[in-house]
Length: 407
Ligand code: CTP
Image (tube, rainbow, N blue to C red; front, side, top):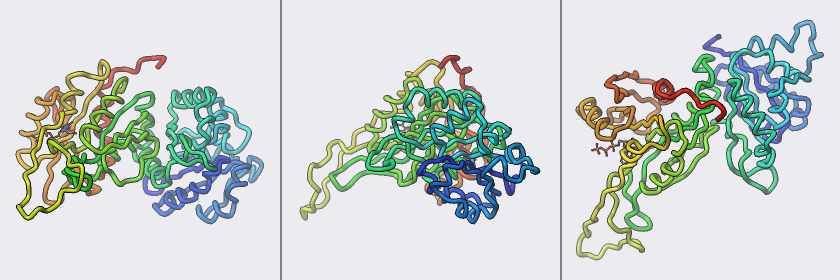
């Protein structure tokens, strides 16, 4: 693989979301990827050839009968480091699942030996149809990465699951797949729950006790897990980032809401990663109206302890063999505090990082030591939060029981 300028095939299906894929193409080319766009014939009804050619800086490959001497139906797939199909229509998923090859894109899918990332977009009914479910399952079983579509407004006035994830999120997913250099969908068939962000504990209707967590590390964990083929539930507390492609996002506010969502989702999950910064304490009572100055000085706020979610889910697992991961942000005696916290909480892995002086919170980079219940410690050097996330998933993957067949 040309790591500096990877060769990406962008297969475009005939869906209205093709217009969003122009933005994805832009992100790819601007960041040094060489992109060959392969639209289906009907996709060109939505976005025309000149747009794809101009944005990719290359002629668009549209048919098996063009430039036949170059054998395009074989060459394009063979040369690719990554194939992204977006939007992947129900029809394209069906053809890909059954090995049909009646146009250039479907031929390319059969000749490519690199990772293939499908980003489906269609109406909810089509996505939920047993035929589509079976096709998606078959593709995933064979190692393709099929992102779950996002929930939101669809074509027309209706809304539901079926939206193409935002171009930025798709771009992040594509980059993660490339960054793993073809190691593929090792988390396919796995279900993971990730919590992210920081909880807010209401003092009155306008004020809260909160913390400085940006949610970036948790979002990076969700992005990377989805790009490795996992089904991802992201329990998100007060995060202002775009939804990661492929993840189902549940929004929560307080620690107790986060606990309810995590307990609800963890049944049957292969792993639960608690990256959220959960408030240890909350006000004993929330004022119904905004607290006013009275002139007599501030009234003290009485605090009570929140439930310790990590402790609870470590003690009582959502299924046998479930891997539970905690995070710890420490300002001093990092390893000593980390080891004590791992023992106290009873999780399998604890990702410990040092905070303060501009480290970790809100930054794109992170570094950590991952302590394991078996006594081992793995240093993860400073790097993008996505790289750290991938290392954490490596450690989780190594602890997962073999998948139950027929699941
Ligand atoms: N956590 C949790 N529930 C809480 C507090 C924390 O599930 N009420 C989880 C966090 O998501 C994180 C881990 O526990 O994965 C460590 O959080 P931290 O606040 O460092 O742990 P504490 O037990 O609060 O330890 P400390 O004494 O350092 O405050």
